[in-house]
Length: 491
Image 1 (cartoon, rainbow, N blue to C red):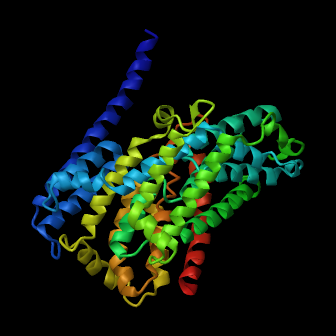
Image 2 (cartoon, rainbow, N blue to C red):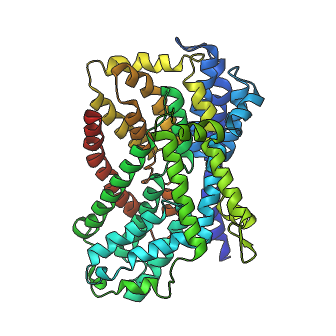
Image 3 (cartoon, one colour):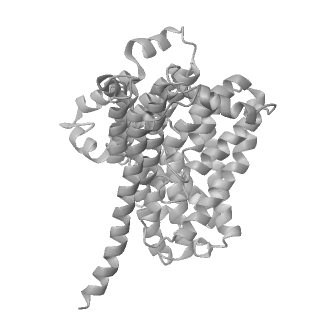
């Protein structure tokens, strides 16, 4: 008798959730396979109608029901649209060098995690002696420690590590793990990890978007500027979040006043040979990637990287070397162990689907760019490029908090590229604005993997998550618009 009410109460939400899932799925599939049957809307071609329906479908399904299966189905649907064959769609997606490069970086990030390098860096930063007696500075450096650590690894693993360190610290200092201060720290350290990952656009879905943008505008993304901008904005935003904790939300920092942060690195030894090897490997990959995209194309070293080996090939050679080289009978990278823990298939499938769909969206054969051009040109008639940058930043930030960051970025690429080219905008800068702004899906459960982790924490309620991440998003708007507009003027 006592179990009956609980079961009946639990069944209704489950049934409601299942009903929504199937309703959303049916809507998505109708767009994917039915939208193209409608008469073409000029200047769209019949192929363009089908491609637009596929794009709307994957954007909707990614935002409502899941990531992997809509991506796979979208690839097959694209092959049935007349834009290409199914074999060509699969080749353009899973056979892309971008997907290969993302997979290799996941393996490298997994190796960095497995050898403990990421944790070592984070603990070293947050255990500096000068932080004792400076609670506000300690909190800021706590965020920065895991921000820097996430540069080299995937954020999800670092977030779990950061939370473990945070909760252990709470026990040492005397904070209740469910106190407002620790809850705020839980939110903001996860944000710090995410923003650290966002700084390097070679890791996952961001790379697919960069390649899609490159295909649309005809020249490579400015990766050095992307990394610098993301790093600078991330650091300043985390500083603002720290100050907001103290002065806006008025969380209690007092128990940290006498906390000796060196205990967080108690027993931590110097970097060992394997960790140093991974650190140098990460630096090498960064240098090679930046040389390939930032230096003149006619330089022999650039030609060797881009034309002979390619960056994806360089990544593969490095991973192969890490698996090949043994120290004391053990390989630097245990491929089986690392691949099982580090490879996340959903981002890989998102990249695989985003590349051919984005190419189709921007193809002359579909007429989609002409359609968006005809809609937006009158709206921005007489407006300057700074207005376009502000529009792209705000719209990307709002939409990515409501839906799929990948889909939002693809949508904005499709509508702003023709407009930006016509207005004479700095297209490299516009691409950074779109892709980085689309990374900041923080406020609502379906916005990103990061927000899903936050909402999965029983101690955190929606009001607290939205208010604290809302501060970060507002800070980005206040900082990002003048920053990118200034770059637009001086570049």
